[in-house]
Amino acid sequence: MPATTQPPEALYDRLAAPFEQTAQIRRGNTALDYLTGEQVVSRLTAVLGLDGWEFEIREHGRSGDTLWALGRLTVHLPTRTVVREQFGECVTQRGMAEGDSLKGAATDALKKCATLVGVGLYLSGKTEGLPHRAADERPEPPANVTRLAARQAPEAAALKALFPEPLRQYVGLGQPAAPTPEQWAQFWASSNLELGWPSREIEARLGGHPAAWMEHYGTTLRRLWVLLKAAREEEAAAFGEGRAPAWTLPKLPAAAAEA
Image 1 (spheres, rainbow, N blue to C red):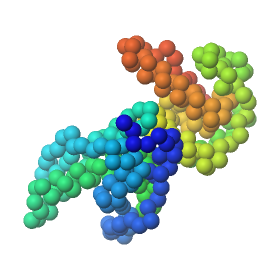
Image 2 (cartoon, one colour):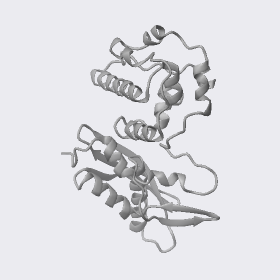
Image 3 (cartoon, one colour):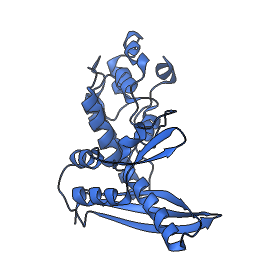
Image 4 (cartoon, rainbow, N blue to C red):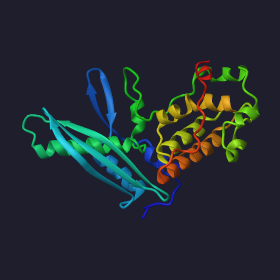
């Protein structure tokens, strides 16, 4: 049974909240903040409850001096179960016992899995040096998105015809208002935790950044969320029935994505 009945958006906000204290390690001239395994376990338990999450090692092995482990984190939500897998590793130091090295690899796998549900994900943007894009970093809308409205767009009727009948009311609405940073943050959190689609998956499905997609198809961020949920439900139903999806969301035309 789920340990909580909170909506996924609220859970993600609590999981992804910054920590008051972090550990730090230096690599050359770069200072890296990180979380300990105990901090990650405490956050998962505090937010999800003792029976709201599980972690297991699926496989483990050795490559030279490095021990690796494939971990699986399972999060029980009120309406679904979220599963995330990641590899962790630990380089064996002189005098280190095999068990301690495997424990280090398992802890590394747990921490990496936890970032996929938001825990400590913000730390990927706090390091010095070259910018690094994490697996689910929330991208900013492209700078040229405001120019898309100036391009001649198809008529609303033609846009609506690309969507199944029940969903046509959500597109062809003209120039949408720009979402606030808070609305974008909630959108990315919900797409990752509730749909299981990180930002790169969303962009791949839409053929570009959601802001450009909304501009082209004339819709709002809230309505885009409805469309994405409908597409996810159709995919799940098609998979269960052993058929191809009856419809998918149209992608952003290449010309619009590059404009």
